[in-house]
Image 1 (tube, rainbow, N blue to C red):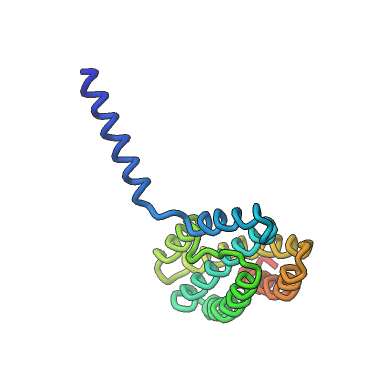
Image 2 (tube, helix red, strand yellow):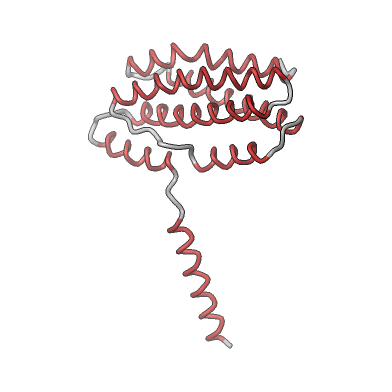
Length: 186
């Protein structure tokens, strides 16, 4: 009896190991690991690299959620906000990529696993009030986090990072104000 249990446990452990090994690594973790090597050698400050990586992850998320909202939004306000996200987040992401290239910071090539999971949950919703509500709530949470992140970056020692945050913080704040207005939670 003990032998069967041991064989079962070994088989289960082997299956779990293979499953974990088969999953691709989180794109944000890959970028963070690459940048940590650069911070050790003094190429980039850790806080600046972290800001750029997280800002890129957030921009890609807002862009993709915006595309969903433009297509699936029930209210015209949500659809218009989705279009705004696509336009503004593309602009911001292109600027962010240029800055990262200049600073030799590796950015994620795709959404973090957590953001991808959230986007998939939103994508599974059918067009309707449930979609609009989930989109609005996600945008409020994400933009509140972004405002905090961009304000913190204003304290960077790197003038280019600080200038980037200063230039785009008003855009992020206006997105937050607009989505709160749409939600009725001004």
